[in-house]
Image (cartoon, rainbow, N blue to C red; front, side, top):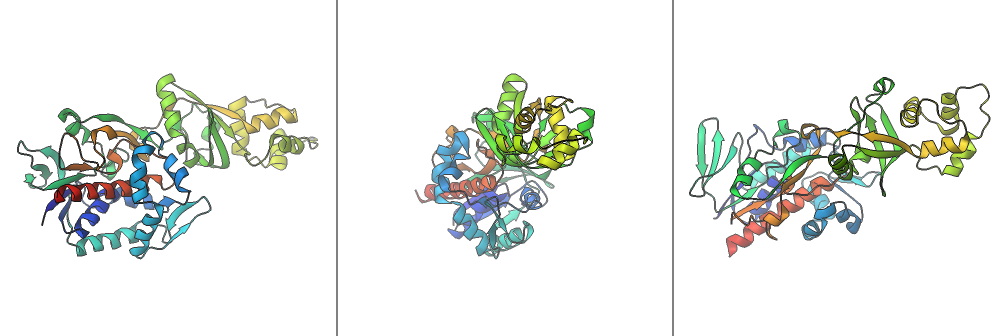
Length: 400
C-alpha cells in the first residue's frame, strides 16, 4: 500500500487525503496547529459560503489570469460536485438570493465533524503539532514536533499549506522560505479580499462599523455591486473584494486609486432628478435627501466626503453626485487581516497534475498556488478542485 503525506489540514489538503484514501493509499495528514480546519471553521462564522450558482463560464472568469489553468480542474470538480459532496456528509445546501451556496446549518462545524469521521473511517491518520521544515538530504520530510525533529518517508507528498492570511489560524506562508531558496518560482504573497485605507475626515469615524447596502463600486470599466462596511481605516466588504485585485495593483503602481460609489444603482440619473426636484421648503438638505431618495446619514456624509461639505442644490448635479461619489484609496490592509492571499507558487512551476517540476513526487494544492478569486464561494471551490487534481496526480504517478 503506497504511503502519501498530506501537509496542511485545510480544505484542499483534507479533500486530497479523502480521495487518496478512497483509492487505497495509506494517508497521513500533518498540520502545525493543535487542531485541523481552523480557517475553514472561521469561514463558517459567516455562514460558510461553499460555492456559487453562477453559470460555469462566468464562474471560471472570476479567477482572472489563472482562469485558463484552473478551468480543467473546475470542470472536473464543478460547483454541483461540491454541493453533492457536502450533502453526502449530511449537510444539505441552499442557494441564497445572491446566488451563493451555503449549507443549511450555516456553519462549518457540523460539516467538518462529519468529514473528519469519514476520513478516520477510511484510515486517514491526522498528526497535529507537526510543522513542516522541508526535506532531508535523502528526500525524507522533516517536521518539528513537541518532542523534537522527526523525519518521515513517503511515496508521494501533497503540499496544501495555504496562503498567509489570518496566520493565527495556521497558514502563515512560511513554506515560501523553504521552496524559494530551493529554486521554486514563488510570486510574493500579497493580501486579497481585504479592506482599503481612506483618509477619512473626523466626521466619518463616527460611522465606523455601519454598513452600506445595495451600492455599486466602479474602478475603470469594472463594476461590482453588493455591500460594504465603513471602518476606522476605510472600507471593506464583499462588493469591494470583487475589485480588490485591480485596486491593490493600482495602489501598488501609483500609490493611490480613485474608486467611485453609486449609492443608488437601481435608480437612473433621470429618476433621481425627478425625485430630487420635489419642493424642499425649509427642510435641511440631509432631510431632503432622506425623504426623496432615502439616503441615510452615513450615505449623506459619504457624499460630503466625496464631493465636499457644500453639496450642489441643483437636482441634476446632486443626482450625478449620488451616482458617482469618488473616494481616494491610499493603501491596503495587511495580509494578517486579509481574507485570502494572492501570489504563491507560480503555476508554471507545476505540471498539469500539479506536481513540482523541481521535486518529482511532490504535488501542490489550494491557496499556496498563485491564483486568487473574490469571495462568494470561488475560494473554497478552487481549493477543493485543486485538492482533487493533486490527488489524481499522485495516483497517476504511483500507478506509472
